Image 1 (cartoon, rainbow, N blue to C red):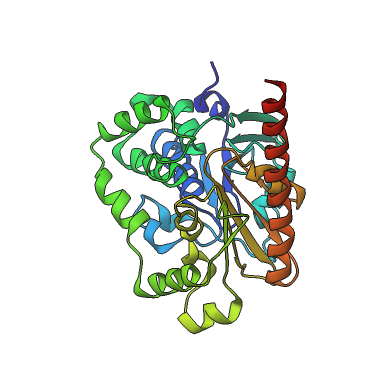
Image 2: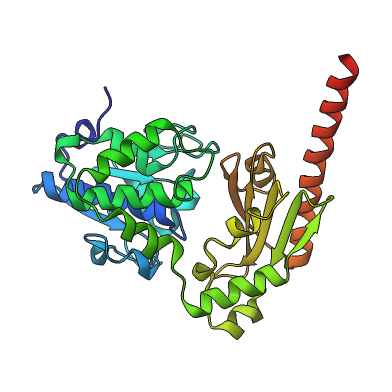
Length: 331
């Protein structure tokens, strides 16, 4: 049986990292693994590399130990590099240089677009989250309350508080076991998923006011431009959750939200309810994700980017209608 402990046997140095612009699942899974190693393997030197994380996640144990790489940092050769919630080396950002020279690499992920790029891969697209997979890899008796908080946060954020279709009975069972560790589960949900600052509420309102329906109300879109971020004094990380709010509109199957990245590109976040495969759409533009939640970064003007994505959505809807018409004819 595969376990995290088996990969740590005989290791003296380990690097841990996740994808750029870390979300709840990325942060939760990375800190869970980091804390597990620190708690149980005092002879292992562990380093955790992530881009700056949202302030609301800073309550997690050892969040202050996260290292932020710079392009000028020299290369280090680790015995093991653990990549979490990441589909390819490029998504690791600057820490990818450590992955490339590590003696051994291990990837844990649930993205269907994962390229199995490590020496050893634990990839299960049907899992709710990478945090759920991390829990399965750990010795349950060694999971402390603090580690449980990290895992629970990761699961909560990638399941939309257990609302998304990726949530399974196994997910709920694991959540219950984490609750039994004594975590303040309601605070984790309220403080990190629902509560927004006033500025975040304002930009959410702007995105909703500017939203448009397409294809007889089956799809919804919204675009936030760089000048609007400046007006409301928010950053791209403050836009978390807006695409899910768009998708919750009555009668809508899929939502697309276009907003600025930290660089000159735009992020396209995609969500669907039941049948549109948004991962397929994202992959056509070089992105990836899951069938009901995906994303991609694209260059160009935001309105033109939106048109390209909507064209792919329209094609999927047309193909679906064609298939249904075919089935009706045959019957």
